[in-house]
Image (cartoon, rainbow, N blue to C red; front, side, top):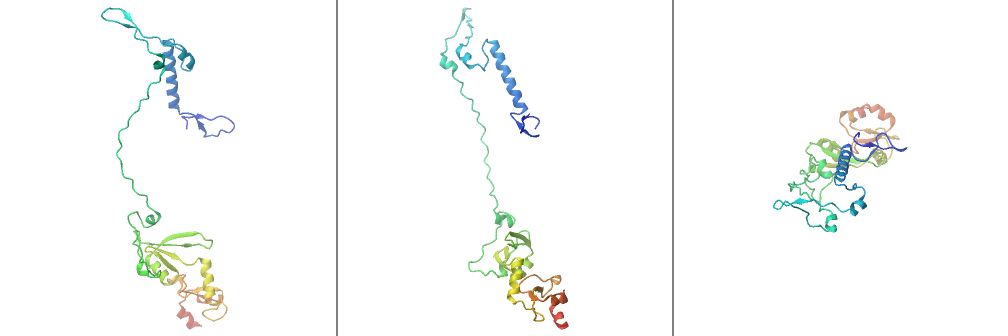
Length: 251
């Protein structure tokens, strides 16, 4: 940043810079000094006054003939050719070796661990609950995706065993061989269970407005339609983490 000049004015900030860098400014100054020195040696006006430079003809150098010892001047060059700009010098760079570009991985290939590994396509008439179609990615996991209560999409990696359980218990469906999709958000799942059981407690038959896991989550149960039932508040607190057989004997 210190190689560039500070910007001045009311709207200039602490780190605002403008113009050329220090090396370029030195080159411009050195080039301008060389032009002035050359103009002074040849009694020519400076390069800035282009009108005077075109008006005054350049002095012709005097050459000496070695055989006769007399001085002679070369032929006069026409003014149009003398003032014509020199053709630009074009530098030809060496031919670069063309290197093949690697294809950018897509979203599906990035999730499966690389562009070369892609899951095999599913059969035409496949069942979305057929767990035999599931395969793991290179990381040894299965992708699960879904939506939140506000409609935002999410995805995460889970084990193959959990993915099989969620599909079997009708909480998810198979999208492809390495991905499943949750069918319910938290709010939708609660509404679905309460409506399915008609707000009736599964244990005592009274009015219920809570959801209880038949196999407790502490013992490996999951929040799926096959493992959740409606329960009243009293039965839900009494059951806690007991198995359903043990709790039904106590009733």
